[in-house]
Image (cartoon, rainbow, N blue to C red; front, top):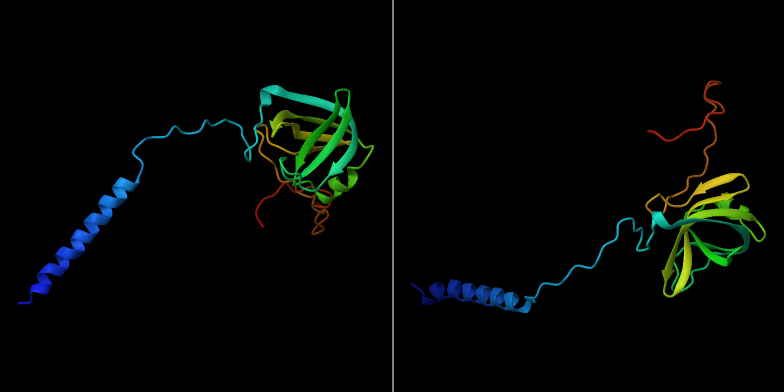
Length: 169
């Protein structure tokens, strides 16, 4: 018999045991407290439905470029009785809604104020303008993707003029 055959598995076993021992010692033994979680938080932003407010005013500026320290997406600077408010309407506005929002457009917004990096931002849940109601966030503050209205199908006279709410394709 060869003495190497007996020592090779022993060396492998000793190597695995030392790696396991090293890994066990490298892991910190102290437990860490989990960070506090908040119900109704969407995309890292706070939304408190209990503190919703309604603001009526006119659009002073539509900001589509990303500003450091503020949520991504479109912002409306709205002049109202409380002064100018930065209203975040998110990245999912339809193209026709974006085109309809411009300087001087009267709007009403429903949402909750949040302070981000020392700046107050109104997280808009619902945007009302020009006879339209646009849902921006769910009641829990999560952004909702807007869907452009579909053209009515002309397969038969019975379906013309009806609006589809989804379903299988």
